[in-house]
Amino acid sequence: MLIKNLYIENSEHTSDIRVTDGKIEKIGEDLIPLDGEQVCDYAGKLALAPFIESHIHLDTCLTAGEPVWNMSGTLFEGIECWAKRKDMLTRQDVRSRVSRALRRMAGKGVQYVRTHVDVTDPDLTAMRELIELREEYKDVMTIQIVAFPQEGILSFPNGKALLEASVKMGADAVGAIPHFEFTREYSVESLNYACELAVKYDLLVDVHCDEIDDEASRGLETLAARALETGLKNRVTASHTTAMHSYNNAYVARLMRLIKMSGINFVSNPLVNTHLQGRMDTYPKRRGVTRVKELTQAGVNVSFGHDDMFDPWYPLGAGGMRDVVFMGLHVCQMMGYEDIINSYRFICQNAAKTLNLGDGYGIREGNDANFIVLDAKNWYDCLNNDAVVLGSYRKGKLISRGEPSKTEVNFA
Ligand code: 17E
Ligand code: FE2
Image 1 (spheres, rainbow, N blue to C red):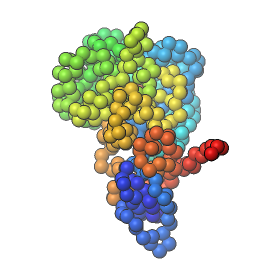
Image 2 (image 1 turned 135 degrees about the vertical axis):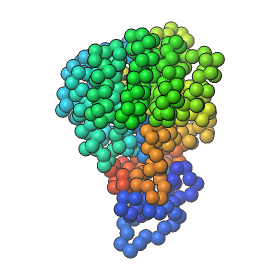
Image 3 (image 1 turned 90 degrees about the vertical axis):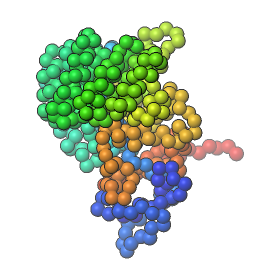
Image 4 (image 1 turned 30 degrees about the vertical axis):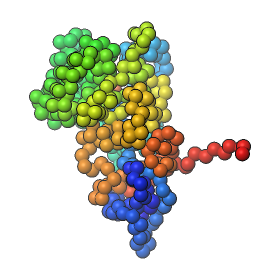
């Protein structure tokens, strides 16, 4: 198949992509169709590597208001609401919500997802179902599962054993939640334990790290130190790190050295943490989003995640990554031309690094023919106009298709 006239990653010139046996065989200008070759001409549209959702909770998605709404808008009330919903979980309930969420995401150009799954559940219901769904969806969606101890590793009954059981069941990554543990000692011990498990079972690590406005919440330094010392390094991700917003600058200057040495990745969730953080402030109210601009300038890998889709922590969300980037650029004040035109990286290449996807991700000859075509010429226009995903290709197969949105204005 020959897919013609694409502006690949903001290129000034259009190129054509020849797909053979699900792989990108050739990329070039004005490729001539072979005898009998199927041709699809996009007549000058943007092509990007597929979007990557580097941080979401699929097990909790589409549960807002069940059985109660989060009235305060805090993380902690969200955890209480979820604990009530968690008691009602069944395998079928998880399957039905996750399937709906994945379909929405696929329509918005997402093909890779890292989901956190709450394992502070004696039955591990969601974990069991997600492991099955990961396999069932693998041809259309690459799913990574983080065993996420929502109510703590040392502060939840049997927390350590539940985490290890989830790892044995087949999680891809080990999680932790140091700012939710009862004490600072537990917080340090929980991070040590998560890294030990990752080393023992050869897994990735992704920690909900310091998701609080407390400037004294310093899980990040422990996580970065363990990443360095164990050699896990870029296999480790610090998600949220919202306390970093409130750290003093002298401390951040010291911490930055360790962060760089450790090679860890960061995931910021700008929509959700703009909503959840600063809730105990009067005025001025902190934004509570981590220091994306400064980390990026220091050469540290940062990706953006949505975090939630209509659940106890976030009452909105339709599965797309555009709003995440849009909010991220605003709240982090990264609104220069270069910032905007290159910002797809937060949900493409940077997220691929977070997920440790390797060289197989990206529009390159020899790679699987995984890419998306958007109804715009470049990412700046795409972001600004919330362009439709015209096609999402996975190993050369069109797994979702969209029509350009159309509005007529009736005046001269
Ligand atoms: N759980 C948590 O601890 N933090 C979050 N932002 C979400 C779930 C969504
Ligand atoms: Fe999260």
